[in-house]
Length: 164
Length: 164
DNA sequence: CGCGATAAGAAATATTATAACAGTACGGTA
DNA sequence: TACCGTACTGTTATAATATTTCTTATCGCG
Image 1 (cartoon, rainbow over the protein chains, first blue to last red):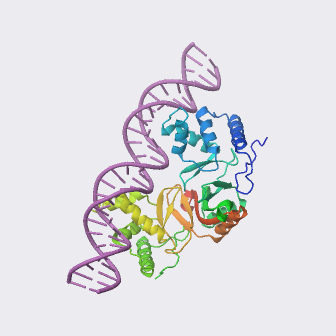
Image 2: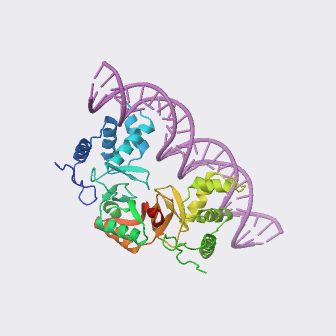
Image 3: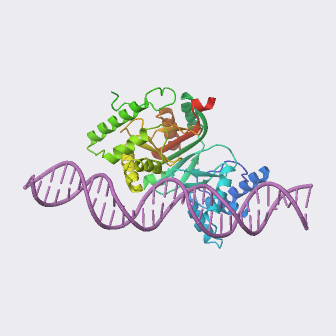
């Protein structure tokens, strides 16, 4: 299995089975939480699964709707708390330009990642590009700025949509 | 005057007078709008001034509050419409990680810019770093992605706050 | 079991943003 | 100048996103 390795969430080679993708994301999450002694409770786990169902970023209320269709009808704080936990553990990312959430391609790893957001089909791909990170670090340092975190969200057309 | 040149909004050499800064931003805006045949109406102009009062990003409702304290009490759409205009004309930027707006350092120029956001004092500095832009373009291209726009918001500590 | 800590439920509300429609001011033209 | 069409603003209502607060339940552990 690919425990704790980088999951492919790019555009170029996503010929994988989607169910597998969710399943392995979940395995990683269980492993990460186990190691850290934090609890991947049913709600948190279910929210993570829902987020991993697609490569499309999901809003908190979209997640809420899915949960509601399943019998539970939790209130917003339940979802936001689950998301906060998942963010803290590095299992999901928040895309602030979309107010939406996606699974993290490197569960449990630190670092922010960069995102390619297709405006046509709505998919998101995560990069962890050292070149971009270096350039940012360098640009910040030139201003005497100490970098703690970054948001890099690139919108445009994915390889599939640019042709259509 | 510095008509249409790049305004310094960095941390390193902001020893300028703040009133001048607002005034010259306004001059630039008037020039840009004049050239383009679009109207910098009183509301739009006032919103732009309010945004330029500080290096701190301002939320739409904060702008609304300032306007309310001045006798007008416009409703939210008035402010959002002014902001939309200013965004379209390249006179302000929106920081999506903060849901807030700042003046653009290169009024009227295309391009997204990158932002250094100090979590301690709340100031924002704009970069237009070709190195970062190249790295992003390159990273996107490697995934076959066509870049249309980008959001780069770096949070951390500015030179003043890192010492304190 | 019983205790302390962590998580979830529930209600209300805050914050950010937009839709829809009515009225007003502006700029061009005759 | 009077008219007309467009662009701008006012107003009301509401949507979408997120948080506060307090209560109740569950978990892990001694």
